[in-house]
Amino acid sequence: MDPINRRAWSDPSTVKSFRHLEGWTDPGERAALECVRGEAAGQPILDLGVGAGRTVALLLPVSKDYVGLDYTPELARACRKKHPGVRILDGDARDLSRFADGSFKLVVFSFNGIDAVNPEDRMTILREVRRVLRPGGIFLFSSHNRSGPGHGEKLSFGIHRTRNPVKLAHRAIVALRHAARTVRNYGTYSKLGFDGDGYSIRNASAHNHGILIYYVSLENQLRQLSGVGFRPDPIVFASSDGRRVLPADDTSDAWWFHFVVRR
Image (cartoon, rainbow, N blue to C red):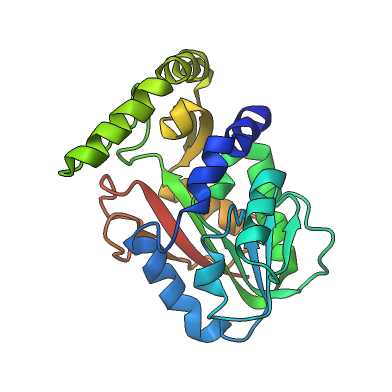
């Protein structure tokens, strides 16, 4: 997954699109951050997978004691340019050895960044995050829902609906420009799908079908968190509407989940 996903993240078109991202990805992300805002206020925050800096503007008001990290140098550079003076590092969530045990009150891994690595590396990230959190510290992250509408996406050219004819025409032109790459990526990467115990790996339509993504069942994600030593009572929000999710709920409308879990 690494060479495929890194190639997609470092593509100039991806970096350009990420530079313009602002605000919340969805109601669930907003609900999750509001849930921890008061407790994390003024406390040290680690922002994993910071990308081009969308979350910097969301987290700096919570605490100026902030550091962002991204494993794609092109995105990290874009983030530093967009937010001069903010501490943004090149680094990998699988290796947080530069940070001592118990360094942070809050660790954030937004936009399903944890889903870009293989199952073994996912568990490494969970263990590393737990290590750098203070006792009682909070891990806020999102992950794709194996039972959601995004699992197993078919070939798509990314022409999102809009009532604005100019925007629609522009999107169609962009999609046509990248059509050959989209078809090629889908034909290659869709064959790499894999079904495991409580998770799947699938080609997602984002970035011209250029990425492989880990999709997890709610039950399995809770089991993973408990297995590495997080407290067994996380708060979970649905991306679709920000509602609180319980294990027995129907979550088929949620593209992903937002987890608030404690060390």
